[in-house]
Image (cartoon, rainbow, N blue to C red; front, side):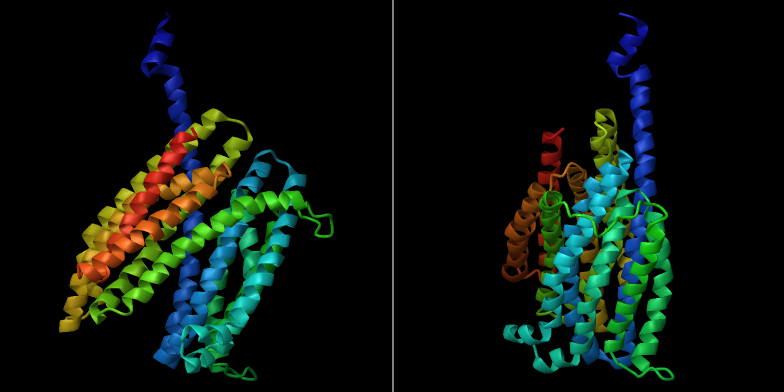
Length: 458
């Protein structure tokens, strides 16, 4: 046996060097894709926070509560629909990797059909929400106060689903910076539109809290128009009058619907904890509010890694490049474990200073600080556990394997994590801390099951 063969067999030499070069290359590609995606999520969160703060400051707590009902319902349905549209991503990434312009156009047409179908279901559900939510015991006066905002958000679903289609296409084509530029421009426009439409200016009447919804609608329409124009520079334009590939649509839906359910499940469990926490003491509610805001910020990174892993895996899989696919798996898991560890350490070190800065030194504030420190530590553990699981889920999505991860999340969070959290909250009297331990339990189980699925498919 030659020296070169001996080195390669021992795990050294040219073969190993090439493997590590490929992993480094994939690691760089993942980061270049994930960072803009993460920034997009943070900017979108900034728009949501801007709406909340402006309504609260200008119109008070009652108006904020009225707007929150419509906003939460919109968010759940939007994430469900946006996740379903995400089923296009692995197909489109594969077409982009093959430089198949015709297939990319076919998939864009399928995407617009999905937008129309999803909007036909979701828009009426939000539009008529003030009527049917009364059946669940919500205050009719509160629903009436938020009706204008809710209906504006119902109309917003249509352009926003178009925006999400282009976000999915541009991400799958590894051009997320295009979407980021459009999103950055819309952030200050949304804030300015909020103020003008809520307070009135010149011939424009004051719409009150409804103005925030109208502003969001106008910004969504402007975003979609900008993306339609901009996307044509980086992707082939699709003819929307051509025949629709209904078989292709069903294939995309088989991948996308489980993603939508998974996304709504994950969003729903945190919303459920928020509603449950609202029945507990003031310190628990305040501490949970802070922790949830931090969760939204840190989640942007892990969600971005999921999407980046999905695109790179779909690309490697479509080209039949087993070595590249293995490099994507290794690099994704290394980066996700590193990211989860860093976030866990940062939250552990910053829990006390952050809680102290956020709350005052009154008796109620000190009680909230004590609870919040524990919750922020649990959030760190949750990120440490969930990060590699989300990356693994993205890798499976790249291979169009979405049903099993959906089932894992349903079982882990709702079947096991939720009962554990309620037991610890009520029976063991741990309050909101018990609920967050349930969330960590769900995250750990989801990651273990998803990683097992990934390793079994290697």
